[in-house]
Amino acid sequence: MAEPIYKISLTGNQEVAEFSNEYSWTKGPQYEQKFYLKLADGAKTLDYSLVDNIRIMHFSSDSPFTVTISTATDTIPFGVKNFFSFDPSTTTAALITAITITASTTIDQVITVEILGETVS
Image (cartoon, rainbow, N blue to C red; front, side, top):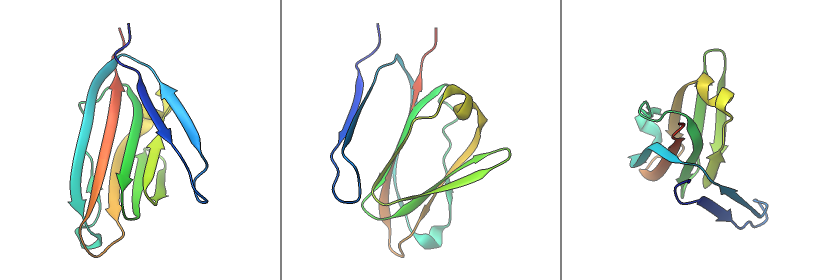
């Protein structure tokens, strides 16, 4: 039986459409970190190497920031205003070689990251 259902519900305003997603899986290793970052710090590379079988990733902050997902052939930046959730397919997750975060403010901003894995039996 799966661990507790991981559920996220967001309500939108003019900039974000309202939606609700529900995910269920056997929870595996996870990477959770909250850190301070400012523009002068440059890009912070996340070490999520303990997370096998990435199931979902969440990134949030009160200020805008950029999440960059890299593969062997591409670098894809995502400008984030408050919250970004990425649910990669198994194939896509296997291709990710690096995830970096870059702040857009000159003062420290708090950024929260969750990368959740799935235990596959």
